[in-house]
Length: 218
Image (cartoon, rainbow, N blue to C red; front, top):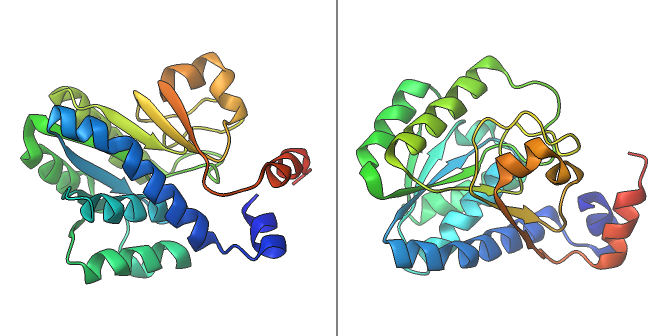
Protein backbone atom coordinates (compact mmCIF):
# COMPACT_ATOMS: atom_id res chain seq x y z
CA UNK A 1 0.00 0.00 0.00
CA UNK A 2 2.74 2.44 0.97
CA UNK A 3 4.73 1.57 -2.13
CA UNK A 4 1.79 2.11 -4.50
CA UNK A 5 0.82 5.38 -2.81
CA UNK A 6 4.35 6.71 -3.19
CA UNK A 7 5.07 5.51 -6.72
CA UNK A 8 1.71 6.37 -8.32
CA UNK A 9 0.33 9.22 -6.21
CA UNK A 10 3.61 10.79 -5.18
CA UNK A 11 2.63 10.50 -1.52
CA UNK A 12 5.80 9.88 0.50
CA UNK A 13 5.64 7.73 3.58
CA UNK A 14 6.08 10.77 5.80
CA UNK A 15 2.70 12.12 4.65
CA UNK A 16 0.93 8.91 5.62
CA UNK A 17 2.90 8.83 8.88
CA UNK A 18 1.86 12.37 9.69
CA UNK A 19 -1.78 11.52 8.99
CA UNK A 20 -1.49 8.50 11.27
CA UNK A 21 -0.07 10.63 14.05
CA UNK A 22 -2.72 13.31 13.71
CA UNK A 23 -5.67 10.92 13.61
CA UNK A 24 -4.23 8.85 16.44
CA UNK A 25 -3.85 11.94 18.62
CA UNK A 26 -7.42 13.04 17.90
CA UNK A 27 -8.69 9.56 18.80
CA UNK A 28 -6.80 9.60 22.11
CA UNK A 29 -7.61 13.12 23.27
CA UNK A 30 -11.13 12.47 24.66
CA UNK A 31 -9.88 9.64 26.90
CA UNK A 32 -6.86 11.62 28.06
CA UNK A 33 -9.08 14.57 28.92
CA UNK A 34 -11.89 12.68 30.61
CA UNK A 35 -9.62 10.42 32.67
CA UNK A 36 -6.83 12.96 33.26
CA UNK A 37 -4.14 10.54 32.14
CA UNK A 38 -0.61 11.15 30.84
CA UNK A 39 0.29 9.24 27.68
CA UNK A 40 3.46 7.16 27.72
CA UNK A 41 4.30 6.31 24.11
CA UNK A 42 6.57 3.33 23.44
CA UNK A 43 8.36 4.01 20.15
CA UNK A 44 10.23 1.45 18.09
CA UNK A 45 12.93 1.86 15.46
CA UNK A 46 10.76 1.39 12.37
CA UNK A 47 7.87 3.26 10.85
CA UNK A 48 5.48 2.21 13.62
CA UNK A 49 7.79 4.10 15.94
CA UNK A 50 7.65 7.03 13.51
CA UNK A 51 3.87 6.99 13.83
CA UNK A 52 4.35 7.15 17.60
CA UNK A 53 6.66 10.16 17.42
CA UNK A 54 4.19 11.92 15.11
CA UNK A 55 1.32 11.09 17.46
CA UNK A 56 3.25 12.48 20.42
CA UNK A 57 4.00 15.75 18.63
CA UNK A 58 0.37 16.14 17.59
CA UNK A 59 -0.65 15.67 21.22
CA UNK A 60 1.90 18.28 22.30
CA UNK A 61 0.49 21.00 20.06
CA UNK A 62 -2.92 20.26 21.58
CA UNK A 63 -1.75 20.87 25.12
CA UNK A 64 -0.83 17.33 26.19
CA UNK A 65 2.71 16.50 27.36
CA UNK A 66 3.46 12.87 26.50
CA UNK A 67 6.52 10.89 27.48
CA UNK A 68 8.21 9.22 24.52
CA UNK A 69 10.06 6.08 25.57
CA UNK A 70 12.44 4.92 22.85
CA UNK A 71 13.64 1.37 22.30
CA UNK A 72 16.43 2.58 19.98
CA UNK A 73 18.39 5.87 19.61
CA UNK A 74 17.90 8.20 16.65
CA UNK A 75 20.79 6.86 14.56
CA UNK A 76 19.18 3.39 14.54
CA UNK A 77 15.77 4.53 13.29
CA UNK A 78 14.24 4.16 9.84
CA UNK A 79 14.69 7.36 7.76
CA UNK A 80 11.09 8.54 8.21
CA UNK A 81 11.04 7.72 11.91
CA UNK A 82 14.29 9.65 12.34
CA UNK A 83 12.68 12.73 10.77
CA UNK A 84 9.81 12.50 13.24
CA UNK A 85 12.15 12.02 16.19
CA UNK A 86 14.26 15.03 15.24
CA UNK A 87 11.11 17.15 15.09
CA UNK A 88 10.24 16.02 18.63
CA UNK A 89 13.79 16.79 19.78
CA UNK A 90 13.58 20.27 18.27
CA UNK A 91 10.44 20.86 20.33
CA UNK A 92 12.34 19.68 23.45
CA UNK A 93 9.79 16.98 24.12
CA UNK A 94 10.28 14.50 26.94
CA UNK A 95 12.15 11.60 25.29
CA UNK A 96 13.66 8.76 27.30
CA UNK A 97 16.11 6.39 25.60
CA UNK A 98 15.57 3.09 27.40
CA UNK A 99 17.08 0.17 25.48
CA UNK A 100 17.04 -2.04 28.58
CA UNK A 101 14.01 -3.22 30.58
CA UNK A 102 15.52 -1.86 33.80
CA UNK A 103 15.59 1.72 32.55
CA UNK A 104 12.18 1.33 30.98
CA UNK A 105 10.78 0.07 34.26
CA UNK A 106 12.11 3.07 36.19
CA UNK A 107 10.60 5.55 33.73
CA UNK A 108 7.19 3.90 33.63
CA UNK A 109 6.99 3.35 37.38
CA UNK A 110 7.72 7.04 38.00
CA UNK A 111 4.56 7.99 36.09
CA UNK A 112 2.34 6.34 38.70
CA UNK A 113 -1.27 5.23 38.35
CA UNK A 114 -2.49 7.94 35.94
CA UNK A 115 -0.60 6.79 32.87
CA UNK A 116 -1.92 5.55 29.55
CA UNK A 117 0.31 3.27 27.47
CA UNK A 118 0.56 3.76 23.70
CA UNK A 119 2.23 0.84 21.91
CA UNK A 120 4.00 2.11 18.76
CA UNK A 121 6.89 -0.35 18.62
CA UNK A 122 6.12 -2.96 15.95
CA UNK A 123 3.49 -2.64 13.22
CA UNK A 124 2.20 -4.51 10.20
CA UNK A 125 5.69 -4.96 8.76
CA UNK A 126 6.70 -7.27 11.60
CA UNK A 127 6.81 -10.97 10.90
CA UNK A 128 8.57 -13.96 12.36
CA UNK A 129 9.69 -14.18 15.97
CA UNK A 130 10.55 -11.39 18.37
CA UNK A 131 14.16 -11.04 19.41
CA UNK A 132 14.52 -11.91 23.06
CA UNK A 133 15.56 -8.42 24.17
CA UNK A 134 12.62 -6.76 22.41
CA UNK A 135 10.18 -9.31 23.82
CA UNK A 136 11.51 -8.75 27.36
CA UNK A 137 11.27 -4.96 26.88
CA UNK A 138 7.65 -5.19 25.78
CA UNK A 139 6.76 -7.63 28.53
CA UNK A 140 8.22 -5.25 31.10
CA UNK A 141 6.08 -2.39 29.77
CA UNK A 142 2.97 -4.54 29.65
CA UNK A 143 3.43 -5.81 33.20
CA UNK A 144 3.90 -2.32 34.64
CA UNK A 145 0.90 -0.97 32.74
CA UNK A 146 -1.23 -3.88 33.95
CA UNK A 147 -0.01 -3.44 37.52
CA UNK A 148 -1.05 0.21 37.56
CA UNK A 149 -4.27 -0.45 35.68
CA UNK A 150 -3.27 1.76 32.75
CA UNK A 151 -5.32 1.54 29.57
CA UNK A 152 -3.26 0.37 26.59
CA UNK A 153 -3.76 1.65 23.05
CA UNK A 154 -1.91 0.08 20.11
CA UNK A 155 -0.96 1.90 16.93
CA UNK A 156 -1.79 -0.24 13.86
CA UNK A 157 -1.68 -3.48 15.87
CA UNK A 158 -0.28 -4.74 19.18
CA UNK A 159 3.48 -5.25 18.99
CA UNK A 160 4.53 -8.78 18.11
CA UNK A 161 1.24 -9.68 16.47
CA UNK A 162 1.34 -11.39 13.09
CA UNK A 163 -1.10 -9.36 10.99
CA UNK A 164 -2.34 -12.48 9.18
CA UNK A 165 -2.66 -15.02 12.00
CA UNK A 166 -3.46 -12.65 14.87
CA UNK A 167 -1.01 -14.50 17.14
CA UNK A 168 2.11 -13.36 18.96
CA UNK A 169 1.04 -10.07 20.59
CA UNK A 170 3.12 -9.30 23.68
CA UNK A 171 1.05 -6.40 25.04
CA UNK A 172 -2.70 -6.77 25.27
CA UNK A 173 -4.45 -3.62 24.07
CA UNK A 174 -7.89 -2.39 25.03
CA UNK A 175 -7.99 -0.18 21.93
CA UNK A 176 -6.22 -0.58 18.59
CA UNK A 177 -5.93 2.34 16.16
CA UNK A 178 -5.24 0.44 12.97
CA UNK A 179 -4.03 2.26 9.88
CA UNK A 180 -5.89 2.39 6.57
CA UNK A 181 -7.69 -0.96 6.87
CA UNK A 182 -8.32 -3.81 9.34
CA UNK A 183 -5.92 -6.73 9.22
CA UNK A 184 -6.89 -10.34 8.53
CA UNK A 185 -5.61 -11.45 11.92
CA UNK A 186 -8.08 -9.23 13.74
CA UNK A 187 -10.82 -11.75 12.94
CA UNK A 188 -9.09 -14.60 14.77
CA UNK A 189 -9.73 -15.40 18.42
CA UNK A 190 -6.17 -14.43 19.36
CA UNK A 191 -6.41 -11.21 17.38
CA UNK A 192 -9.70 -10.15 18.96
CA UNK A 193 -8.32 -10.78 22.43
CA UNK A 194 -5.11 -8.83 21.79
CA UNK A 195 -6.62 -5.83 19.98
CA UNK A 196 -9.67 -4.99 22.05
CA UNK A 197 -11.79 -2.33 20.37
CA UNK A 198 -10.51 -1.61 16.85
CA UNK A 199 -10.80 1.77 15.16
CA UNK A 200 -9.64 2.22 11.56
CA UNK A 201 -7.79 5.47 10.88
CA UNK A 202 -8.20 6.62 7.24
CA UNK A 203 -4.69 7.96 6.69
CA UNK A 204 -5.24 9.19 3.13
CA UNK A 205 -4.94 6.10 0.95
CA UNK A 206 -7.74 5.89 -1.67
CA UNK A 207 -9.94 2.82 -1.74
CA UNK A 208 -8.69 1.66 -5.14
CA UNK A 209 -5.13 1.47 -3.82
CA UNK A 210 -6.26 -0.46 -0.76
CA UNK A 211 -8.03 -2.93 -3.05
CA UNK A 212 -4.94 -3.36 -5.23
CA UNK A 213 -2.68 -3.83 -2.23
CA UNK A 214 -5.03 -6.47 -0.84
CA UNK A 215 -4.73 -8.46 -4.06
CA UNK A 216 -0.96 -8.09 -4.40
CA UNK A 217 0.97 -11.38 -4.25
CA UNK A 218 3.78 -9.60 -2.36
